[in-house]
Image 1: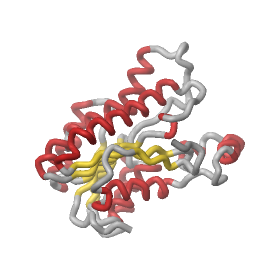
Image 2: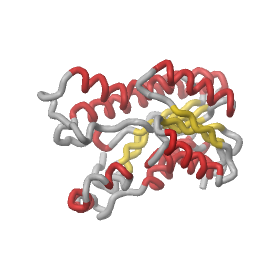
Image 3: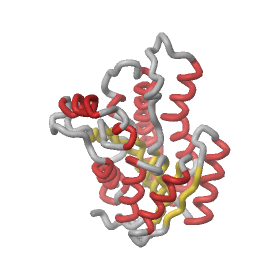
Image 4: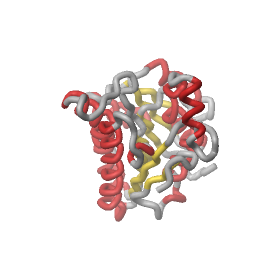
Length: 252
């Protein structure tokens, strides 16, 4: 376990469940106080309870990531409650699992929604911290992309494009701010056991697991462990990288 985060402040976006919850708790175990942001207040309360059980401070903040003004207000609240932000984990995103469409059937409104949810909100959140990190001479920004930035999938053009765009943002921003002691990296999870994947049904999950060399889905804590490296002082010479955490299903 990396212990170099003691006294730091981390912000985890999309922290009400799944990857975000596991990452928020892990940042606390690593020694940081953690602000957790999501639209799901009940989920945030549970994540905050688990963070506080480690002995660190938690600040749950409800935010609508589709609303830029709400994002600004949420980060202002975090800074008032916890102080200077050292680590930002942009973890929010998602696909339209109940209404996925091929490119020819999708329209501009769907693409606007998907690119906002999976790319623009991460840019908006990053704007709230990057200048202060540069001024301080230190910072860690980690973006959650997806293996779908590298794979093809049925009716996944909008999601894949947005997640690939997030990798482009990661690399380019890392090049801009690395000289100031701020690193920007990305994790790209594959199929992972969460409440969302549980809704896919046993047959679909077995089929997915059969495509993975390790023969199983990942666990949220395994994604959080990868994030922990990028968030640590030990990653000070690793900017602009992506780490696939897919059980070997996607190798790049």
